[in-house]
Image 1 (cartoon, rainbow, N blue to C red):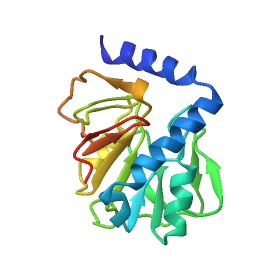
Image 2: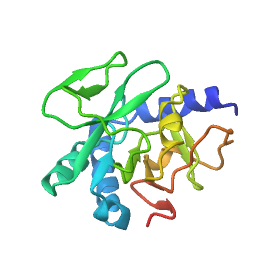
Image 3: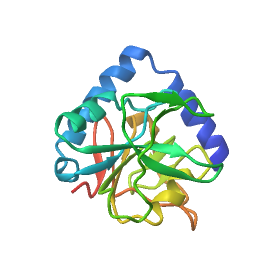
Image 4: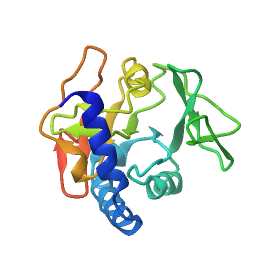
Amino acid sequence: MDKENLRKSLLKIRRAMSAAEAEAKSKAIFENLKKQAAYQSARAVLVYADFDGEVQTGRIIADLEQRGVNVYLPLILSDTEFVPCRMTKNVQKNRYGIDEPVPCETAPKASGKIDLAICPGVGFDRLGNRLGYGKGYYDRYLSGETCYKIGLAYEAQIVAALEDGPDDVAMNCVITEKAVYGACG
């Protein structure tokens, strides 16, 4: 199946999940994430504000903040670029309807400031290859970073194999409600 049809199919599955099912699975994913050494040792984390049925990140953000970790959300700068923006209590919706913090204190690209990126995806395979929405925001940002990369997904979003392109950036591991795939140190 080509990427666009696979994307449509996986989004349909994700969007069909009930709110209660998404909540329960997101909680289980959080419990699996908390056990990972990369999560436990992180001091500056890029995490996404969940949108359109993605794995919920509210618990993750609250846990990181409670532990004194610096939390960053993506701030869209253009059609091709985002920067990590330090989490604030004030947010506004961007052009896609995703929460972004305001005002913004950025973490410059390749700064070494971010040591863990927690990434959304439409789909993943067990090797950590990621299928996003097709805009390339995460691939472009992560291509210049040395941070540890963890993808979060529901088990229904895991596919046998994804074709990885030259610009695609794989995750170190992918965490679902049922399993941890890859080297999740």
